[in-house]
Length: 187
Image 1 (spheres, helix red, strand yellow):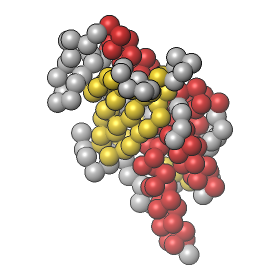
Image 2 (cartoon, helix red, strand yellow; image 1 turned 90 degrees about the horizontal axis):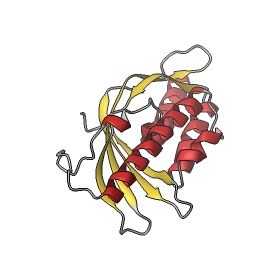
Image 3 (cartoon, one colour; image 1 turned 90 degrees about the vertical axis):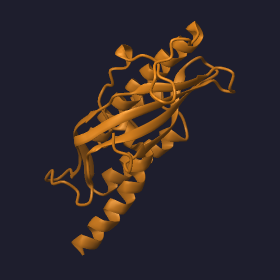
């Protein structure tokens, strides 16, 4: 029975993890990173507006990771900082992932290391968007049972690519509204 329960938990949490894994982390070094275009080369010709949008999006991404880490460690899907940096549909997906872990007696512990870069800025879009790519190192970031801190079977760490989208909302805030962990793509 324990095996079936563990498999069900892993399945549910794996789905939730794909939705929210980019948000379970550590503070990225966003301020030190240059804006990057697709292909990994720095973009020297971004306008001042695009540079500003990229920095605001990376700040939102950093806040998202920190808030998600705090909420996941406390098993608190209603953590108020989540809504400060996230918007739907990702906000709901992150909350569901945290709630699912909590309902199964699991929580996240450890450290998630982030290394984000801006891959594109589109200020003409409605709403304006910034695409972010990250290399997440989840080697020391574990899903554990809250009761005894044993690692949940079938969960894994490692280094992999994650992507996120930030959008500028009518109130002027940049919020992360989409994100995916690509655990099949090492970095």
